[in-house]
Length: 390
Ligand SMILES: NC(=O)c1ccc[n+]([C@@H]2O[C@H](COP(=O)([O-])OP(=O)(O)OC[C@H]3O[C@@H](n4cnc5c(N)ncnc54)[C@H](O)[C@@H]3O)[C@@H](O)[C@H]2O)c1
Image (cartoon, rainbow, N blue to C red; front, side, top):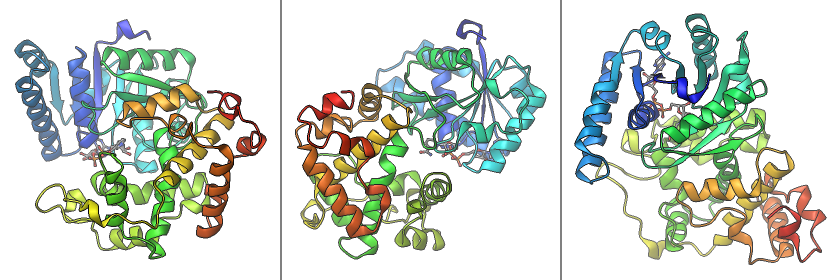
């Protein structure tokens, strides 16, 4: 299947991500069948698309004609079979629960022709696990969009263990047609680029909180003080602490036991304080976005530690053949960071980074913070950034 043959797509799940993917596909000129399990969720998704189109129209980003075309091409339906049998390309955006996704893909295999491309929007799972029970695994690909989908240009295009090169290329081309900037993830590896690189610093900051070294707001104040648009804990509240918790549990199983959710996160999930969606998480969201008092910033955490930890994990992605320096930096810039993980550390001495990582790993008892093997190879090399591929 070539991208030119794709006219009709199905989006399964009309939640936070599904409605955004559907809207993006509509803006790319595609005919969209949007489906969900309940009328309420389906209609909420449709209303969110309409609200967003109006916002874009009044902001001058799209024309009246585009809005009319998008509305005409949107087909919400509770009839799963109708939605998927008409599509040449299916986007799955149902909850991040392996069994739900596996069952759904089996159903998709039964109902669609074997040319139909099946994409999952999983944020952490191995593509080969999701496609495990299919006969034609080569047509399953990962397409990881970011929230809010219409705003963030990045899509990670993930080649599962069995994904064919043709399917990978068509998925990539379809993202371009939808006005997105795709980045290839060449190996089936959990959490891909952005979430994988961000994972260890989240665990580190959780350990800082659990040890009583600094409070979430003090850490976020430090991050915001240094010019980032959002702090770590506010972002977790925004994503949903239940989602962060479950992703951490999954990584604990497939990547490293250090991903065990930290105590404060477990406590929040026990209390069902999931963040923005429940009105309370690390912050109170009942009056909208929390105000963070920058004067409360902690002096117990060094801001560059976050960059060192991200860089270290990014180097592990190079070692594993998941991606390359250019694409990793690009992916981070596309999600709003001023610099990618390699760009962020280029004025530091490698020795300083390695020594600091060793210190943090010992201080917090986290093996995932240990310097990547490649870093010790270049420890005494002044051209270390060139050596690792920049
Ligand atoms: N929220 C984010 O920031 C984010 C970012 C990137 C990727 N993701 C991933 O996207 C996926 C969806 O996440 P979300 O945040 O949109 O979840 P969500 O809970 O907002 O929406 C999921 C929707 O799927 C529907 N659904 C459940 N089972 C279904 C089925 N069998 N058939 C059809 N619809 C079904 C639910 O009713 C719900 O409306 C997850 O895999 C998640 O990890 C989420």
